[in-house]
Amino acid sequence: MARKMARTPQVKKSPEAKKPRVTDVVRRPAVTSQQIREIVETGEGIVRLAPTWVPRSFLMPGKRLKLHPDDYYALGAHRGGIDERWFASTTPAANEGAPWDEGLSYIVYQGRKFVTLKEAIELEGPLFIGQPMWDKYKRWPVYSKFFDNLGPIPHHMHQNDKQAALVGQQGKPEAYYFPPQLNSICNNFPYTFFGLEPGTTKEDIRRCLERWHQGDNGILNYSKAYRLQPGTGWLVPPCILHAPGSLVTYEPQWGSDVFAMYQSMVEGRPVPWDLLVKDVPREKHQDLDYLVEQLDWEANVDPYFKDHHYLEPIPVANTQSEGYLDRWVVYGKIDGKELFTAKELTIQPGVKVTIRDNGAYGLITVQGRGRIGKFDLETPAMIRFGELTNDEVFVTYDAARAGVVFENTGTEPLVTLRYFGPDTNPDAPNVGDHKRLRY
Image 1 (cartoon, rainbow, N blue to C red):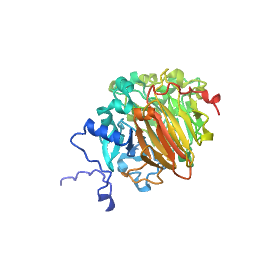
Image 2 (cartoon, one colour):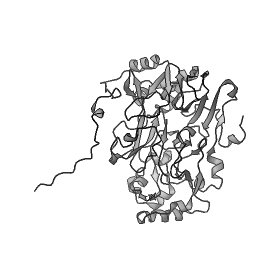
Image 3 (cartoon, rainbow, N blue to C red):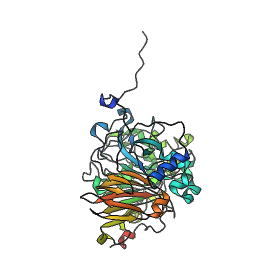
């Protein structure tokens, strides 16, 4: 008797889900530069973006991203739960089995997802990100996300440019900010392990890798956990081990999705060896010495790690008496380079203010409602997978420099987070400046 082939698991759809949605993407044969310019002109330099949801098969979603409870596994249980929302992203998610556009933000125009931000910038790069950034990178080289997990992430690192180039990728520095609006519940483990304890040797970590298939390889025995506090953050260069805790995290970062997991088991769930070596040359997949040497040893065993990486918000200026406050929440240089920065803008009810910045940015609203330029802003209470929202936009280079009008039309503070690309804010603070720059 012929054996029946196993079927790929299918997501059961409700009758309502079978109806076409206005957010369905209509793939045009070709989107022209003229169309892109018209979209930007119509929005006076601002474009609305659709929510971009990303699952992770090896993590458990924390369910604080405003996504409807029925939709956290909308892509199928085999893909994993949705625990990330990406903002103004032109970087595809490096997930096995992912469609080509997973992780890419879409521009919304005339009530539907019209074109990816990546495609639009490829056609009209200087219009979106400015000539200097376009000339240097030929893309929007950064993105940001919320990640939201029930428990901790395995102890891992992100490769630097030299290491990532061996597999055709780029390195990935990143930064964290913990928005208070999304962290009224801390979930299971609001602590993050960073680096390695001073005195740890390379042989200690090599032995952890040798024990990979024997259960917990014990790498956390060589690290230190820091209690996470909403309203603070961290700057994390490449090649530094970190095991993020369970706070919802706003994470500006370089436009890459490389990583290497060094912890073999988290919360009783095994971590596949493949997630340790996915961005390592194939001939090095079993080379334990190479895997250990990937780590920036001096930075990992730094006895003053917190002093060199911890961030607290710093006001841009003393403007509270005017009904608004703009604060740096991500800042600092990595290897002497300003790669990304982020600000948190809070506007009180009834206040209208013009905000001028040095360059383009992606923006997400985390509290309240109001307007930005011609567009409504509204923080959703709940989002169905595939629905459009009024909480995310991209502000182009010239519009940001000319000044964007924000207005709070609600009864509570309007709070937005916006992040910037490289070399945009040379006046940004340095790590540690929060101790002296206070109002």
